[in-house]
Length: 217
Image (cartoon, rainbow, N blue to C red; front, side, top):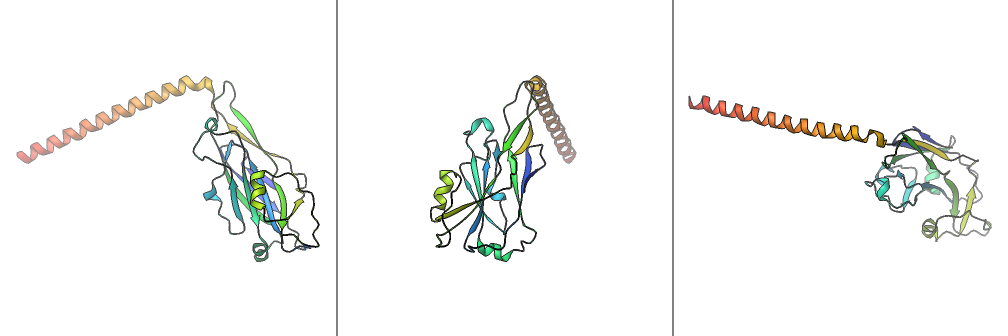
């Protein structure tokens, strides 16, 4: 139902395959999928462009900051599929959604070459306005920031995710053992680039002087 591809690297895709039961006693419901995004991972709202669903990100993403510069709190991505959208879809084979994920650069470590990020299984639920035939059912805890956005809905119902395990992503990590080599190489490249610019400047200056001398002759 949920998978990551690839499972190694700084850029991956969280794929969702959801089987929908077309025979619902309450056709007014809206289907929701809530993804909990750890602070290591970035979701770019501008990449969430899917005509089959709407997305909303809760929390501050800080797209450009490294892991060491952000609060160690999760953000939340809420995907919703309204009844109108569901009616327009051919859902005989289920619904498919791909969410691009990007990982922040972590702090270099001494001896470690990678670390593992765990992404919790997304929570699936549906919600609608109170219906006389729809008794209120217990709802697993949702973050307050998400619940506040659903305040107009009075009926929330959990949908089982069939025991899908948490997802794991392995991310390369800088090794402090390599730091002297990296710093030396960086300084060397900067010096070489500077010398190359000096060489090019002198070559251009010499050609300009020769051209000016030919004009005078």
